[in-house]
Length: 300
Image (cartoon, rainbow, N blue to C red; front, side):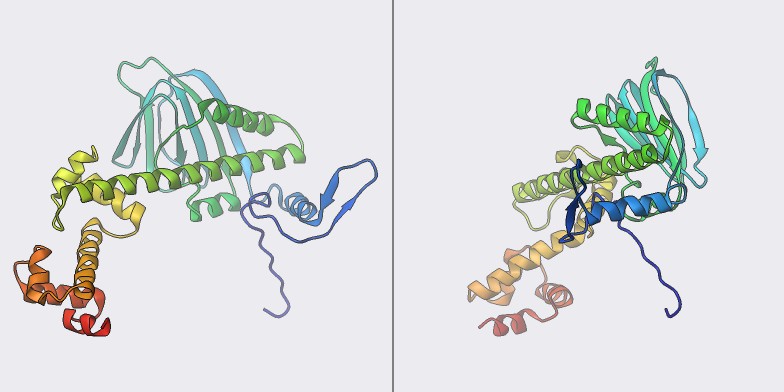
């Protein structure tokens, strides 16, 4: 708009560097680039406004119970030993060993030791500010409890974060912001890889059933989850309901038969498990956008 200028940096300069900018050398220094200077200038101007660390700590033998709404702030939590159960509203998670989990505004969040577990090793960092809101919008801070991969490396990174938070000065705070965001980005990348592996496992189980009308209860058992959990997670990871995905697979096979064979449409429907060719035709048209006959003619 005329008379105003608004400039917004990416989530973190190190995560989204500017490219093709000139570099120069100060005598006795390493090569610097304009993008690193831009990042430093931005954070020096915005520090204290984009993210503020409220408190953080490590408890080797934690016995705390948390039950509250996080009002206006969030935290990243880590357990490396022990056992916890955590609730986001009524959704329960049981965790043993090493896990990350987030706390953020909105749901009532509760966590405490599992029965029979004397303590758990706890690390956490709490913070607030506009940058936290960006992380929430980007999905970096709103995720379900996540097992720790590369435990030694992640412990080292979290401990570096805790030290940077405790250190005085603006540069230490910049370093802490950088360390925290890099950790959140790494966890997001791990979730993406886990989701891909899980979806591949679902597809493999669907193929093994050798039916275009799979037994969803059996599929859930094969994936070692409840049916409602299977449906909910599939929609979350694939972006489409499981039933619709199966229907799309079925109709993709129909497209192949209509294109590569001269089978009558009724026979195509029967091969795909449809007992009513009219129902098949209606479903095909709703999903593909053409009747089976129209689709076949368009491919000839």
